[in-house]
Picture (cartoon, rainbow, N blue to C red):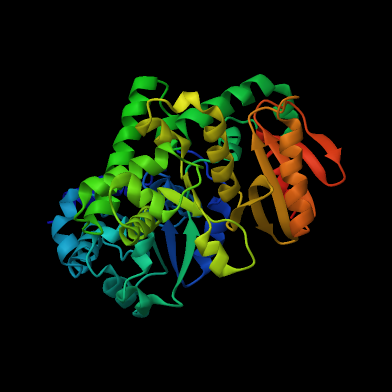
Length: 430
């Protein structure tokens, strides 16, 4: 029953490694975790490269002389598994078929897009507790994957790693521009790559494509699949038009202050529905909601919020005027890059002056301003926003991130201008 699809999805059984894959910087950490018993969960927006990480891990295991037949990869997004979606017990049949085909018991189980399977948690817990495999790895495109009542059965049994589209650091690494010297030597090429990232985002398959028309078609397809499959279908949303209107509104107004009441008025809904819709969009990793910094959680809840899109390419996909507001696109890009650098606690701050981002690090808070270019017209305003936040919140370091700036520059004590391509400078401040 499953012979043909298993052969198709496991070409490594012939002993051949996967080729033409983008190298991912998080691979090393995932390889270290292969020795741990816990289930490894890779969560992230659809098409961000989770399947590629599986293939990179399989390549690593092959290099370590793991028999290829011990590696079982199952892509549960394939409609061939429609019966498995309804009956997770059929996964035992898939494993049995694999063993018959190869004559070897699989020891590494890779389950891709597991959220398609009803009550998948029962199956995973069963094979984990029975120690059928050395390692179980699963991927999902929706954070609600681990919110169900059944998912609590796996508590303490899994480790989560986020997977995001390519970071600029990864793009430079794959382009073999991976040292400070090479960045200086190829600065014009570096800026061209940053320009492309600004408008088309970091989805790996998009970066393999050079045709602008096809790139747009790819991105529109990604966006529609996320909204229709990961949001509307997965959460059984009834108010489909209002949900689509909200998703479009949020993406085309990224980085703009909003309240739930304002959004409700804009699309003709109510606050409770808006809150639910925003949460669903966040769970699909399409957007991230950013709150105003406050020591009071109550005040933080009441103050306006901002939303940023997970990838600039998706803004490109839904907006016909995306090139008109380069500043908003750049702010969105910096936000996503900060997330990719590991800064998960990010706020904005406005009190007298606005500071674009306030980020938490191991050594305290860092204030960040974002501007495409620093000119005589905006320099004073950007510095005031930074110093205002630093003084009022006792922040030790502040950065102005620019796109067009060529070199780093110190503005004063603990204040710096940093070009986008050197954004990982912030990591050295932590």
